[in-house]
Image (cartoon, rainbow, N blue to C red; front, side):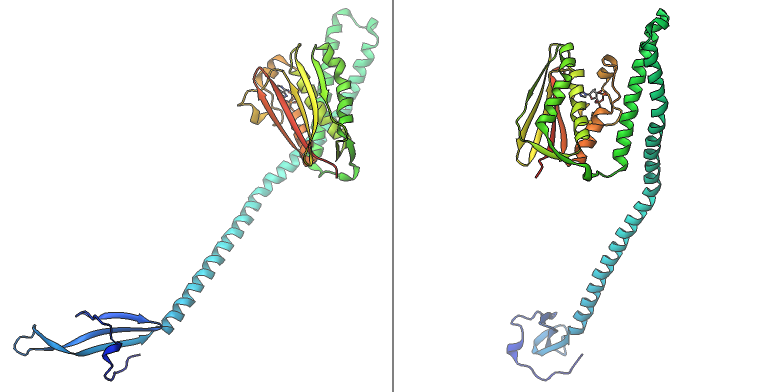
Length: 331
Ligand code: ADP
């Protein structure tokens, strides 16, 4: 709004007004003030004296309201667009993952079905081999070796199928805690050590245990047995004769800590990140220790995770390995 002003008081003017004028804003009022000079008629460029000041003033209330409105529109617009972009991204990711998830589910179903279907014929083969072995007089001496190899291979296949079936079941089903019970870990581990003491003796390995009593966890007894059996059989398998395997149990805060330590062949640092992968075996294990499918540690890890626990390993090539299993104590 422009108004023709009356004479205003000198004091309301800024103290130092340059020749080209000054723009000032006080609150919502913005004003431009410029001095007016008397000019010589004979010398138009020569300034005589200040005649007064010209001040143009306008209110910035409407402008600021408009700016505020624009700012808010911009914020709301940016938030809406980013929100929509994020939702769109999530939707697109879910859509593009659907076929992957579907084929993964189908693969798990196939593994489970195939393992299940293979079990029966394999059991029949193993039973037939056992019957033949129970009548050695009927076997031609040249076939005895072949029959023994068949018995070993079918036992390995059976173990592999059982492991695959167990993994497939655990992948497909959420942990069913209705069958869980309190398990005294010291008793479970002692039974396991006793079970494998003959094998350790045959391999000339000193198998020891250091267990404290009264450490209970809540879980599936057969799965926990399988977990520690896998670790213990590995320790015995990958430790040369003359070595030592120690199974120990401690209580640490609200956790039970089971360690299975051996003085065996050890694992190279670059191989450590892979040892819990399915079907992974170190080259040395493949070449020198034929037996094994590479599923034992994958099963151990899955069982530990299903019991809200954690499994880790420390190892030095040529010196030995130590597996640590942490399980929450029963409350
Ligand atoms: P495998 O049937 O081959 O024993 P696992 O999943 O139990 O399968 O182990 C995977 C690989 O990890 C083994 O092939 C071996 O290379 C390595 N490994 C596991 N335990 C030990 C151990 N105690 N000492 C040395 N190497 C081990």
